Image (tube, chains in turn purple, red):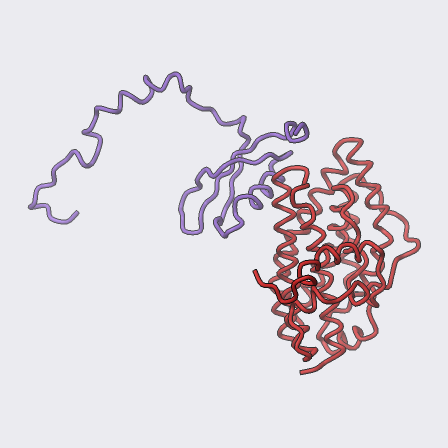
Length: 96
Length: 251
């Protein structure tokens, strides 16, 4: 649809009923922020999912380059000492 | 329980919501964008939900054993008591938005006033409808602003829609004979008192959208007496076809 192509894309974040943080749920097309909020409400909160909505222009989101994922993420793979499961809790400590 | 005066009044209110709700549902599969398809469908479902509550109450007031389905599906256009504004065809998107703006700018102060009704059933319907209608009005005013201030084409269409539907706005404030008595008893809002709020909303919205308020001239009437345009008959024929072929059919 050519009309649709002219409408900017907005990323939608919803804070659920019981949640503390907004989570990315999808995107909508809209002419501006106010219309994007209404579209997000109508598309993503129809089943009582939300208590708060954020929208952000998709163009404003800077993303990591998929081609650089090896240098970005692989170095963390072998550092198990950063995981809490890597540590043994002595029995004398009891419940933590 | 049988109360013919209140029955007729509640039936007219129910018909307003059902006819407008069904009109909006006709956009399903045809809306300009997916987001708007869901928005119009959501509004339609709010209105049909309001209609159900009102039909159930109307059936109880009539006391003749007719339930919500009997009232919605087994009356002809001549028996429908809705405002003629809400039965107007969807037209282009601007016409649908103008119809939403005109109706909802009345409906919000109407339901707000109805929350104070001495009739508990009507006050309960109003409490739910008020919140829903506030969002419907936001939807209509935001779209009116964007179409009015959008492109030359959208401005032209929005102004044409405003002009075309203006003649159906007088009826929004007409009181049927029984309504004055209900208003005096604190059951129904006095429609004359809604006019100032409607004017404020319409003037502010049109002004924001660089649109011109038409001059008042001939105004349509008769909806509350069952006098409707040809389009309502076509709409009801489609809406009622399944129940007319298979009376009492359930999902």
